Amino acid sequence: MTSEEIKLNVEKALAEIRPFLESDGGDISLVAIEDDRLVKVQLEGACVGCSVNQMTLKSGVKMTIKKYVPQIEEVINIQK
Image 1 (cartoon, rainbow, N blue to C red):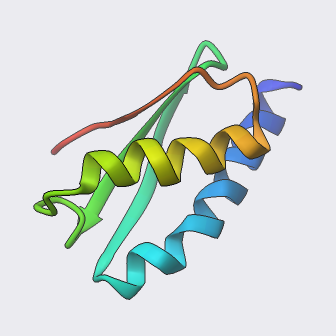
Image 2 (image 1 turned 90 degrees about the vertical axis):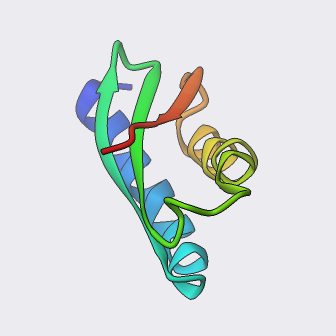
Image 3 (image 1 turned 120 degrees about the vertical axis):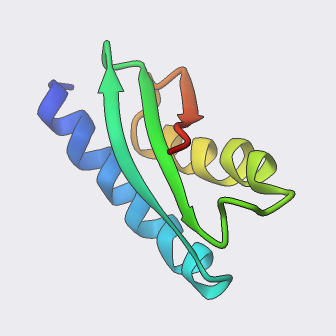
């Protein structure tokens, strides 16, 4: 998978997750993909102060991204 294909697939994964986050007043955006293995995202809106955002990141976001791009090893949230 090329870097461009990885980016497109990560964006597809985020599009799948976004409605769930938006229903709780949050959102997510892609910040960067490093070495085709590390995805940096930014949780936004209500997700920023949510007490379960790390669980959402690991269980929901990472799992969905890995469904589209199995080679991704880590997903981290970059805070402003």
